Image 1 (cartoon, rainbow, N blue to C red):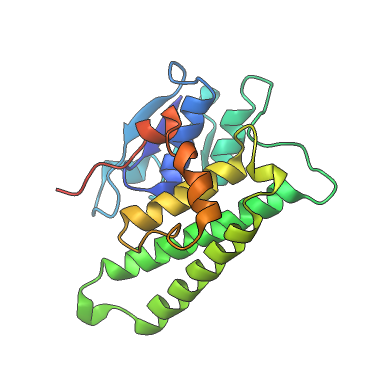
Image 2: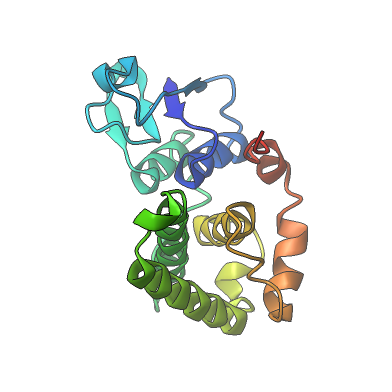
Length: 202
């Protein structure tokens, strides 16, 4: 199988983390894609140009980190990162909330990458407020059983979101949030998290 990624995309990072967490390194080849480039050869592989993108056994193709992570998790017949639905749907709810925070960080970072005169103050203000609200939400819910214990996708998305905020220069969302700080510190040391850290800016 081939997993197309960029090493700066937090969504591609999630898929790369799952490859390591599930021990699929010998089954999934990581391929760096060139995106946002006119006439990139990657567009002949994936017309949308988005990452991650998986070309699975038998030629099955799929994009979107949510779909790809779920597919990779079940390859061994023992999906461990996507628990079965529980009474209050806690895993799916918390994963969705973490993805909402990650989406806000990604939009903020893309806006900040524009020349200063082309940035939208309204967009930046909206996403900044959303990100801070979501961080406050997780400060109050990180002790939930779903975010403790064995790793799952809700935990992985939350950790990647928090690290992306810091790496993209939004700021450290654990500052002033001691519960989040206590939770993230050991989680960031997982081998899969360390192995998939984005390259440092040149």
